[in-house]
Image (tube, rainbow, N blue to C red):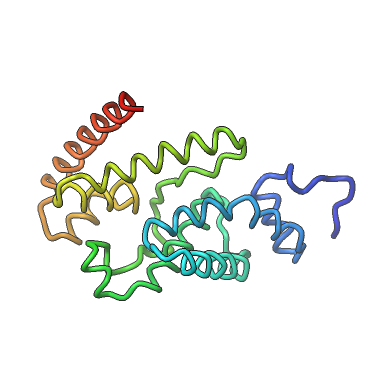
Length: 199
């Protein structure tokens, strides 16, 4: 049923999803426009080639829209969409490349009971620029950490892996994981303060 006298861009994600389930094409377009930039930024954590990022982004939206009826409103739409994008990106990376880059060799299950929310894309342009700059700086500083801390920081802070998942993946004690994450966060916060002073 078509809604009249209503601007779709003012609707919340769950409202747009309901329209999308009814095959309202305009709702798909609004969701795509709202999250296109964020999805590309998320994919760029794993993929370098710009052309590949574009292709994976489109494929991610195609998957999401074809499975839109399975979306669970208990989670943010962005969390659900970004997880699809992440798994789509992983499908494009060979197992060898994942191991070489210290990335997990398996995708996180879609049915995970505990999901860490990924921040939704900010809609105020100025806020979005500030947030993206801060996030880019955070990612850059993670790459500057020593090997042991960098791998764990990536898994915990970027991929949202829990302590036990990291311990199992890297085959190290869970207390070691906790210690390294705590130290990595302390180092990152210090690096963020120093980089702010240099601006």
